[in-house]
Image (cartoon, rainbow, N blue to C red):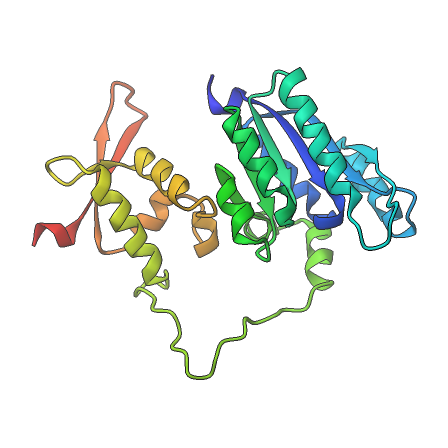
Amino acid sequence: MAEAEQRLAVLIDADNAPRTAMRAIMREVAVYGTPTIKRIYGDWTAANMASWKPILLENALTPIQQYGYTTGKNSTDSAMIIDAMDLLYNNPCEGFVLVSSDSDFTRLATRLREAGKKVIGLGERKTPEPFIVACDKFIYIEAIRAATATGDHADEAWDASRPAVKPVRPREAEPPAVTAQGVPQAVEDMIAEALSKIADEDGYAFMGELGNLLLRQQPDFDPRNYGFQKLTQLVKSLDRFEIDARPTSNPHTKHVYLRDKTTLQ
């Protein structure tokens, strides 16, 4: 089944998801399949949840009530995990989308993948590494919000509510190296290393295969994190790689291959 035809169960942790980013999130989900189930979990009796109502209606999200029985305990996580396991065994979905920045869903993501389901995570950059690597693909909400910011006033309001925070770096630490195009050197090196693993005798590798390998190695890899919509655009911006667009039987379609110029020296 093609990826676009996959039936997806979208489970959202309302306690750990930016409410005004829901429009951008649901647009992103549609790229990977059809969201046949869209549930969002929280204590909807709480006063601070009232502003969710128009967002739920706009995105056709089904609210699942979970009371906060004890102060300081997140019962929403348990309800979402239980529902996910019920859906795993009783609903013919090919994949799950877990929207949260909470590491408590790490084991859930791992279990769903063990059962042969594709798991896509969406969360903010504060998401702990264990949850990120437990997913087949992890997408930063900040990246998709930046890509859909034009004309999205709800997203602009979300941005205004969060002051810009610069990462704190020790005074003696050197800034990360970047290429002439502004892409972190570590990203260029990661692409080159992945390319070397799948290159043919002439040093070429298919761009689609490279993209799949990069996601398996680093689930949060996304060209949009570096200002590019597609992996091909990112690679073309780097002088290190040679691009070969090869014709196919379809005159409107070409297969893109690349190789590392430094291996030719």
